[in-house]
Image 1: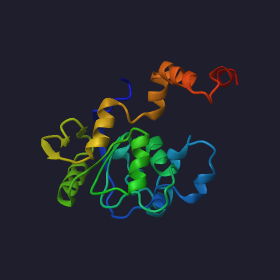
Image 2: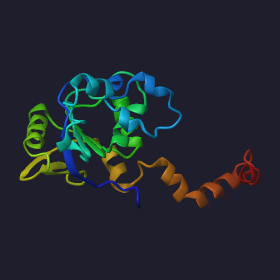
Image 3: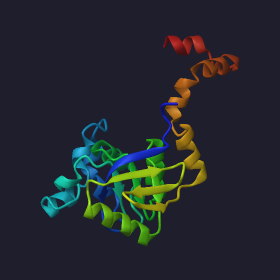
Amino acid sequence: MVSEVKTVSGRGIPLVGNDIDTDRIIPARYLKAVTFDGLGEGAFIDDRTALKGEHPFDQPQYQGANILIVNRNFGCGSSREHAPQAIAKWGIQALIGESFAEIFFGNCVAMGIPCVTADAAKVKQLQELVTADPQATVTVNLEALQVQIANYTTPVFIGEGTRSAFISGTWDACGQLVANADQVRATAAKLPYVSWGNLAAS
C-alpha cells in the first residue's frame, strides 16, 4: 500500500528547547489561511525573525533536511492543525523528541508523520551528531524501532498501535475509504436510511 510508512531517511535538523508550543511553530495570525498551502514559509517565523538568520530553519546547512529532532513537550499549547501542517510544508517527514503534546502527536499521525521518542540523553546525542555533521544520513526505522545517524544507533519508542498503523498504512483514513470504495458502496446499499444513488448523483 502506498500509505505505508516503515522508514524515513534523510538529513536531520536540531531544534533545542523544551515546551515549544504551537503558537511558536505557527503564529495565530496564520490561522486565517483557507488552505495549508504556503504555511511552510511561516514555520517558526517569529523565532526566526528574532534570531535574525540563526534559527536552524534559516541556517544553510539544514536546508532540505526532513527529520526534526526536538526536546520535551514539543507541540504543546493550542490544538491547531496548522502547526504540524506548517512543519510538513517546510519539508519535515518525521520527528524525534523526548515527548510530544498529545493533540500535536495525533495531528501528525493523521498526516502520516511519525513522532518517535527517546530519553533526554539520547535525544541530546542525536542533536549533537546532526550539529557536528549536518550532511549525515538520519534514518528513522519504525519496524526496528531505532534511529541511526552514521555509525550511531539508538532505540526509540512509539506506541504499538500507532506503529502498526504506519507500517500497514492504515493511518491514512481517507486512503482506506478510497481503497475500499466498493465495500463502502455495498454497505451503504444495505442501509435502509441511505439512498446511495441519490448521494452518488448529488
